[in-house]
Length: 131
Image 1 (cartoon, rainbow, N blue to C red):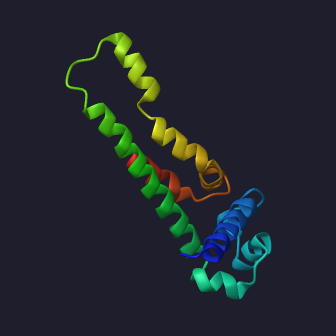
Image 2: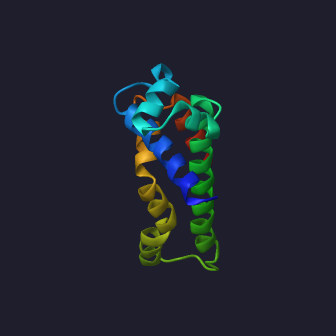
């Protein structure tokens, strides 16, 4: 994927997140998203079929990344071949979810927007299934 495509998709997604700060997703429309993203409707439709396609794409990417990072963190824990002491459990707890926490921190704007009062009510359920 070329840099223009990446940049444009990022602008569209950020446009949606900024819009979610002031309006419910159910009440948003593509015109508002493109206005916040500062792109044309034609550009939007070059990448997405509509606002639900955009939302689904964002959520699918976020959840895929979350699954991958949880798996990495869980793998570290499965390598322990003994019953850890209380002190060792405390140390493990500090590092057990480093990848997952870092991933969530890198994507906090997306998670915050989608989990906000204006976000997608179904995203919480999808997130809950993974965790």
